Image 1: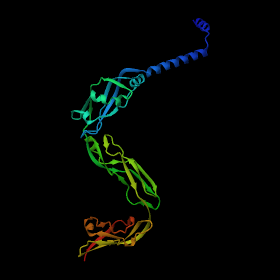
Image 2 (image 1 turned 90 degrees about the vertical axis):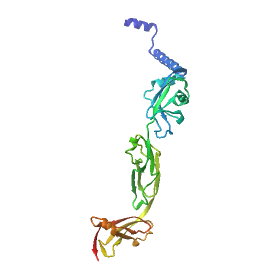
Image 3 (image 1 turned 30 degrees about the vertical axis):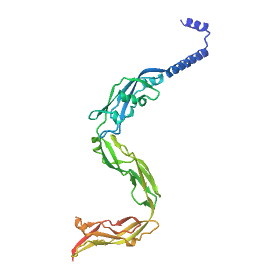
Image 4 (image 1 turned 90 degrees about the horizontal axis):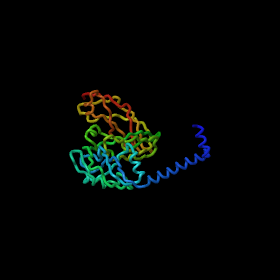
Length: 324
């Protein structure tokens, strides 16, 4: 048998290089034929998954929670038909519908018919596909009930300053609260939303920017981002000894404060404009009465303009009440 095969190759004047060229030519011819045929138009059934969206169904979510299979006989290129049939687990096509297009069936369920499908054919199958007819008659979509409420936005902040710099105020965000939408059981435990991490490090000047709000599964946000800003100023640090004064003490009583003076560390706007020698600290008799330990924290009576921050040492003072 082997001799017979060798004789056959010899009679055909077999050459390895010739056979390689022949094989490549055959493959190229097949490729050209295949591509040509794919470019021709054919009729076939195409299937897509569809989700519905509508912003104007009062008391319901803006998107359906389910998707529906849409089958239609279409005329298009062989390439489109092949791609559609080979596609697995394709993401559903989101189609926005008018409120008038959705007919309520019961509760959370709404439906559309072939007529509404025809108006959305280009969205489902693309501009280069001609839909001959839909095999699907009616599609049912569930738009779950939803409620809404307003919750505060909490910035997730990493903040630091260069030496001798600090902020005049806390970080400001706009908006500082957003309205959220969702099914009641989704909103029940949501009392705030958070921004993505905001990193402002080694600041020596004002800063501003935009931060996205972290999404919560099952919850829709009216706003997806916030604008933030922070004012930064240079400061000088000054230490003064300030006498603690008692106020609102009844005329027949006397309140002694120990120690009677506090060391106050003032952080003031640079250049220095605040007259910190005029600062006063008070302890109110009414606060003393409410205190079980008979110890009180002094509050500013007068704090000069230009003082950004202050620290009182010690923080707590012991008070003794006596009769006159």
